[in-house]
Image 1 (cartoon, rainbow, N blue to C red):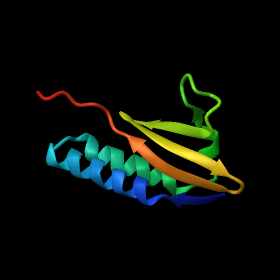
Image 2 (spheres, rainbow, N blue to C red):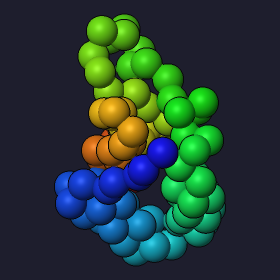
Image 3 (cartoon, rainbow, N blue to C red):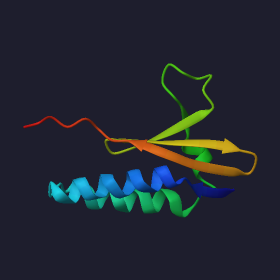
Length: 92
């Protein structure tokens, strides 16, 4: 299985890590490590992909990593990492 990361996903990961580090959130290192582990072996990714809740007909699938949702789409023998959805933080 080939893994491709879109420019959009790469930017979102960068921004998420920057924000976590800026807030000195201990989740930053755990998120980075979990993401590296997850993307290191693309052959196991299809087993972890789940349909989007309430939208099974949509071709995108997701993996929940900590408080983040990572979105993927499989096309032939390539798995595309499309982007991520960060948690909504309160202003406090």
